[in-house]
Every structure is written in structure tokens, then in C-alpha cells.
Image 1 (cartoon, one colour):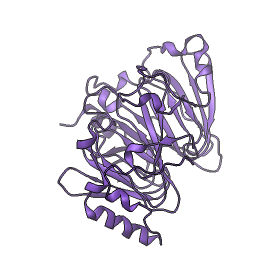
Image 2: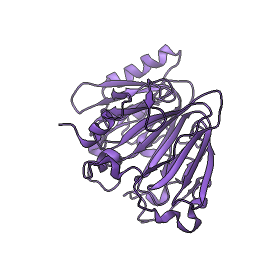
Image 3: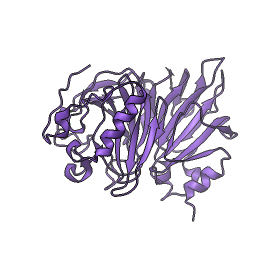
Image 4: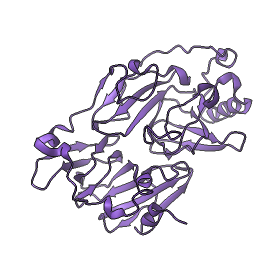
Length: 368
């Protein structure tokens, strides 16, 4: 029997893309979404598993979409284009407008009314939207509850809307803050905190991601007054990260780079996902997955996490020994394929030989 969410998206009359990945958000087929007065498509990829929604919106050149009020927080990532978003609470209350460009990311707070505009008159703008609607509709199956609900968001009272969209800033939080994920080292993490992130393809205030290999760096993403979160990882050319696994619903989009990822359930066949800028994929629940930079420049991926606090659904690796594969333990085929893929681009691996011999090998992490 189809879920309430599946029935709702089927009724919208726009394409639904399924499978393991989308090769390029900027070119996938969309359909006219009459209700929203734009072109759109839903992504229902294997790993979303009724936890998270991902959809693509295309705003025609020079157009402004009708106002929309949505009962849940929603992350928006700009795959192509330049435009303007206006957000407000109650009718007649203060409004906040901010501009965005390709690779910008922002949060639309729950129960806020918002309006999206394309500021370019000669080309369309495409955006990826991410939220937890499928999970919410397992308990409240009526879609009308989530759209244009008259409930007022108190975060927009007393002029607070005007303060929401200043540029995000980094900070190191106080240890044991309730807003942080469970981690012994969480007080040492860098967090990029805010509602507006101007360019995910160029941000360089990162820190070493020592546990995942490849000399990679990371920044963790948090939004004010929201349970939504994510992270962005950057790793060097001609290297690859350690395989790991976690719960479902984590949507990954590529802001920059060229490579592939391998995903597999333990002891079963592997699936190879080629990626480039604007590719999207979702590792299925408890499937190992591993990321490979097969290009000549650093690669970066942006991961939108599933809800925090749900046992077995988080992005965090719960048990390193069980849920991460060290280089010394990986199948020889992994290394061989990487060399073959690099060879197609006239490149060679830059993985240290000691990483395959010494379980305690420590990468030489150098910022920038």
C-alpha cells in the first residue's frame, strides 16, 4: 500500500525520479507544476526511505512564484541561477528579502510564508529543496496540514524576521551544548551557523576530518531554532575516503569536483555512482559508501542530515569498528578501480602506501 506521501506526490502531476542517483540537477526532466506555477520534480532515491524529501524547482526567467507557507523547516540549495527570497510571518508583519546566487544555501523557517523570485530575465533558476515531510506524513497523513496552515510562528513576532538572514558565521561551541550531536570531540568542531550561506563551492574555513582519511576537511552546518543540520566535506584530488555507513535519509549534493562513490549492503553487490557538480545521491540505510575524487581539483560534497535524535536514523557513525572500513581492511578491488578511473583522466593515485599497511597511520593534514 502506498504511503500518504507517495499518494500526494503522485497527485501533483510532475516527474518523480527514482533510482540511486541523479547525475545533474541542472538537466533532469521537470514538469509544469500548476499549483506552484513553476517547473518541478520530486527525487525519491533509494536511500531516502520515507525519511526525507528532495525536490527540484525551476523558476522561469524573470518570474516570481506565488507565496507559500510550509509547516516544516526546509533547506534550499541553488544549483543554477540568481534570485531573491522574501520571508515573513503574519500578514502585514515585517518582511525580510535577501539575494542568492549559484551555490547559495538557505533555510526557510517552519510556518513562514515565503516567495521566490528569479532576478535574471534571460535564464531559469534551479533549486534543490530538502525537508522531513515524508516522515511527518507517516503520523499526519493530510497534506493540507502542512501547507498554508494558519498557525503563526512566534519566531517572526516583534520584528525577528528582519534579523534572520545575515550571513552565516563560524564558531566553536561550548562543550555539552544541547544543540550539538553526541560526540566526545564536539567542543573541537567548527560550526557554520546561520540561515544564509552565500557560496558552498568556495567556503574554506574548514578543519581536519581526521577519522575519515584522504586528508579531508569538514565544516558542520547548523541553523537557528531548527533541528535540521548537515556538513560539507572537502578532500584533495586523486584521493579517496574510508568507507562507512549510517542511517537513511541523508541527501548528498556535489557543489564542486569530479569522481564517484561506491555503495553496498554488507556482503552484497556494489553500486558505483559517478558524480560531478550538481549530482545528487542518497546512501541507503546501513549501506557502506565510499567517496573517490577522480579529478584534478579538490572535490566537495554537501550532506543534508536526517533528523537528530531518532535511533538508527542519524548520519553519525555509531561504532567505528563496526561501521567504518579502514584502508588496511578494504577489498583490493577498491584500490585497483581507483587507479583505473584516475588513469582515464591521465592521473595517478596520491594515496600514501603506509595508509594500506599501518592501521594507525595518521594523514598529514594541512589546512588550505
